[in-house]
Image (spheres, helix red, strand yellow):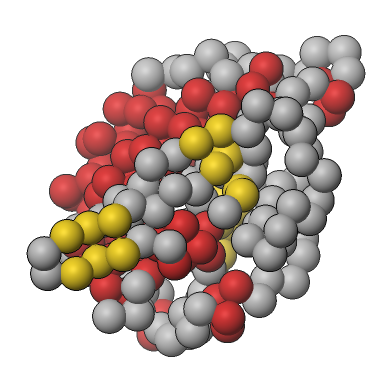
Length: 216
């Protein structure tokens, strides 16, 4: 399974990883996703943005990056995060406002904010820290690998690099039968919104997130 990195990845990203996870009463066989480490940075993708559910509806949050000459021709692992603007504070306020009343927010808030406030130098490092934490807390056992050369798309039927994308139709939720709703704080106002950042699922479902992702 081949995936691009993502910032607070969407539910579909985690569902794809969970698809190859084996859970049984006596053993767990981890999924073994491979992250594309050799692609060039792509703007307007999940690599530096996510979507959350607020009192005003869906809101996009993004990580600003340093626009050096030819930024969009640089490998994803070399893209630096821009810390001269107060985006971390804005992000934390938005998440606080959106999820303060969710059932499990207090259990994960400080850890997640600590990762943001650790200020990793590169977008790759920031994304990876968040991914590793969120895999653990959603119960998706995974052993992450990385590409050592760029693989043209598509590189097999489990190549999700250009499929899980905010600007493109996504059939993964339907394919994995994950269109069913889970509880969302503002669903009574706007209805259920699928495929938000996995933190939406985690803050609302907590340790039961894996049951949703695996359709158990």
